Image 1 (cartoon, helix red, strand yellow):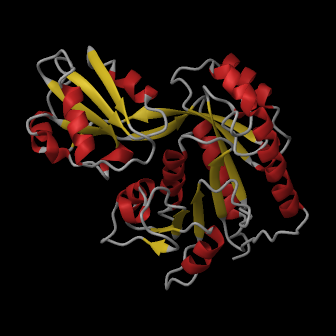
Image 2 (cartoon, rainbow, N blue to C red; image 1 turned 45 degrees about the vertical axis):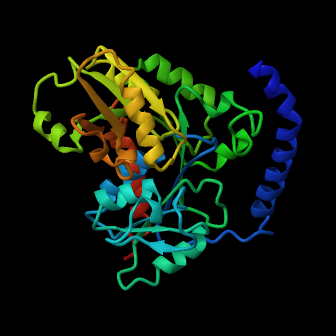
Length: 355
């Protein structure tokens, strides 16, 4: 039934694709202006809708550069309740700048974190700061062609490669697959932690990268669970703290499957309750979560949430139920981290050779 529905949507995909092609052509021909800048602008994005791991990859690059350069993070601030340009400050929260931007702001207080629907305006505002940034990392701006980034990093999910997809609304692509030609680096994200060199080679070849493009494979590395309420703090250092507990994973991300799989290694009973991506939790949601906890067979229970959701989740709502978040980072396969790092650093260094 689902495949039939997708076939029926193909004419609408064609119409949408023609409109996107016309827009991109206007940028390619210079009819629409694409602003370049005399300093490093790194764009991290994808061709598809849904989560490909843009935020942890942005964090990887920020962490790489922040100690040597003044770095700014610029994104749309998806899901925020404000409009226009906003520079994050200590009075902000997830609702004012978006959950992902607020997460970055909390993790990297030394950098400038800004949100703006129009990235060009956002860059102009950042350049007006007393300590203006030397490097700007743009999250989810691959289709925002009003800014011509000096380095484009294209992410694609290992289980949902863009080459196997079609354009919206029949598929998940925001533009035609040919849009991948704008990428300098292509990263296959959310790949298995164990991946054979043969599989890496097969997938890399299937993407048919252009001579100037390099392909990398990254995977999610889960860190130690972080306690979010008092009862969780009390058992945080307990060995096998989840072994005897039924775990409810609560998430408002595009795809929580990898977190479910991860927690299944530590608990015999794992259930998942998902909300739409970027969802803000309210009293009704907490009631629903408490009801879902009752469905766990284990007498002892725990709630696990993502790091992104932790910035907008009230862990005090659950009494004696411990609430933890599981931070993540990314790692690369086959010692690719050094090569990826060198690509980014060499790009940044190309702006400073003459200084």
